Amino acid sequence: MSDQISFRLRQVKITASAALALIVGFYPLYAHAEQTGPTDKKAMEVLQGMSDYLAKAGTASFRVRSFFDQVRKSGIKIKEARGADVRLKRPNGLFVQSVSDNGAARTVWFDGSKLTVWDRHLNQVKALDFKGNTDALLDHLAEKYDVNLPVADLLFSDVGKALKDTIISSEYIGLRTVQGVECHQLSFESTGADWQIWIEADSTPLPRRFAVTYVTVKGEPQFMAQLDRWSIGGAIDQSDFQAAVPKDTKKASFAR
Figure 1: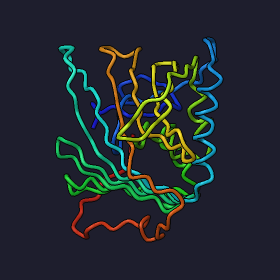
Figure 2: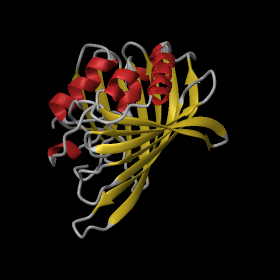
Figure 3: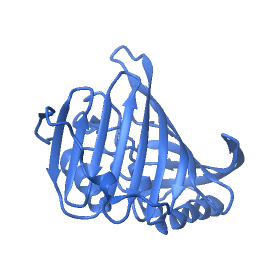
Figure 4: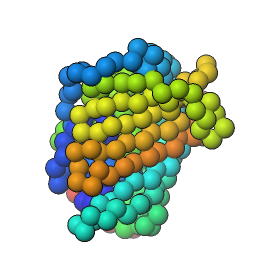
């Protein structure tokens, strides 16, 4: 997994070891940004509206379909794709299941006391004891293990803060249609990346698409994610966050 790119706008760190991902992703972004460019009031208001809406949700589930570049030593960029289903129950329930176009398949469970990662294609499982909520878990994984879950910023209880920490400038582009849904298109410049987000332009301001260009990385790789099949506030059984791994699965250590 060392050549995978991990998507997280909350932080910016471009190092070889940081290119590790559990499920879906790209080069993680680490560093707090000081806002130096123009700020578009409407763009920031729409972004905050999405954050406020997601913060009220006790539960959320959605599908992520991502396409991203792998930059070879030759400089050629190869497109790869992954799909993931995500379920979140605040404060401490998380389930992610993904499949890559290269055959990699993974399932992740977090129940408030243990994180379990099952690499189904390898028949291998690793576990990490951790007591706390999902916010603390995501920070712990990024800071100690250089691990980033797919679209991790959307899983935080304060999405607006997680995204705003890296913003240098912002711009409201206008209304666009994503999979038949009218959305606000917003554009941002941050430390290490230029990114855009499309947010539903109605009473359910859900994120529908991300697009990121990593401007400080050789080859300027790009990432795009489509988010759909949203369910906000629905019932999610606690058993969904309990690991269910076959007995013959090989055990591996959880490390950087």
